[in-house]
Image (cartoon, rainbow, N blue to C red; front, side, top):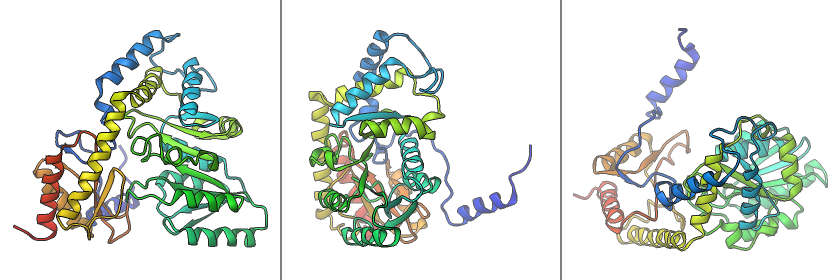
Length: 386
């Protein structure tokens, strides 16, 4: 077999020398402070039972989708599920994708056209950036969560590109690397007042803030498109783009990541359906409250232990402790791992140099003792206490 080309080997070696080399590791039995399974749905057996019961009722039975949705893969349950999801999120229409990455890649590579402008938060997810790169529109990033900088870009865009370009403004309701949120009400008002179209990725808000922050804040009518993923708080797989029926039709006709991929299998659709049903049950509401309580308790521990200077302000399930440097960040992650805690390091180049951090993902199932113990260890390391 041919060897890896030298230029590729050189890039790998650079990663190794920078202590940023990525490897795959199996699922561990450590205390989970790293997964996106915020509500514990991925381990909920009742969801699996509900999904299996639903599959048994649906006809025709299929193990696999057999093709793309435009060919043979559009099982009748797809339409039922999309109608249910659109109603659940107070949206006129919905279109399911195989993953959040596929949804963002497909939307941003197909919807903004040549002559259009995309303004995106500088911390937007890689899937958004990759989609924008594949599309023909002009794109500019604005400073993270900055209304002022966004307003300047909107004004400049009208001046440079004429009075009537279609402008898309892209942000996330909860940012995955920092756990913070923009002022969505003010963002929506600014975008609407400037005749632009707002697109919001709700991947890390769904389940942490009810049905998502746009729903919670009553801003659904101010947004052109919302991206909801199922692989985080809902504990399954896939994603949906919420918008008007015209957007749905456009994506079906022009979105390559939708058109040219095999559809999700029936069992996955049934699991998505079951996760939504469980989410909207009394048990699901109890999980949501448990997560809210744990977030509040974790934040109180940060204050009690004098760690405020290291942790970013966040009211979400993502809590970030800035360490600085790949070596130091990986070292503390290893110390915590040896003590039984799975807290992952976020390293350069995923984040800018000097911004390396530990990301604590909180869950409904984390206990008070687990949170207290892991932060005690962080305090000992950061404040050099014995």
